[in-house]
Figure 1 (cartoon, one colour):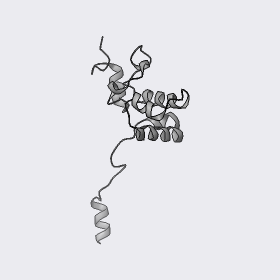
Figure 2: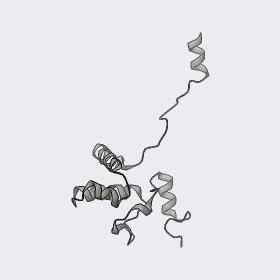
Figure 3: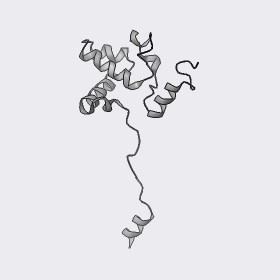
Figure 4: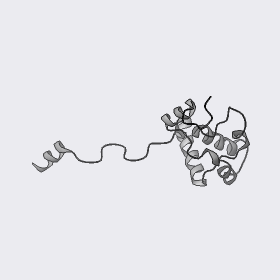
Length: 114
């Protein structure tokens, strides 16, 4: 049976494919993520949601939560804003880089020069 974090583990592969594989699961120090099978520090959405919940429900300070979940305070505030705006979908990492075509191509260049 594949171990957690192993490249052949189906959950790791699924998280990687969805873009929700936590790049630093070892930085999560919340004890819930260290034991048991439900909480998984590899699952970035679950880690972010639990971090937000700990501040909102358990009254953990933002500084403590950021440290416990291995992120910076600005990362916490960005996650909070994204969650407030879009719910769980806001916790899915956005693809980086250009959002669409960013270079002019042949037909457009020809229309402007003529």
